[in-house]
Image (cartoon, rainbow, N blue to C red; front, side, top):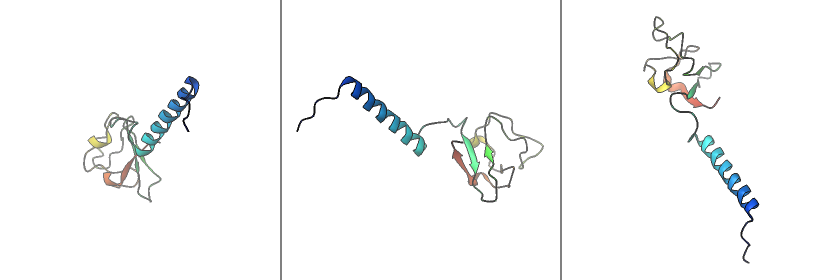
Length: 100
């Protein structure tokens, strides 16, 4: 059985549904979204309540070097290797990107 081609209105609706589904899937897989400079990271240590590192805020505590707080604008990947969570002291390896 041969189907008739979709009407312009139906075709538009289908293309929007496919685009919306693709965008949702990309967001779920972490393929789109924030750039490295704006990506927020959450501490996954179960003892933390959790702390979210936001590059727009920086880190005024900086447990690794309290005399040198980290100003806003520093991407998570650019934080010093010895940087730690200000709430629980966990290293960077405990952090994961978040959409929160």
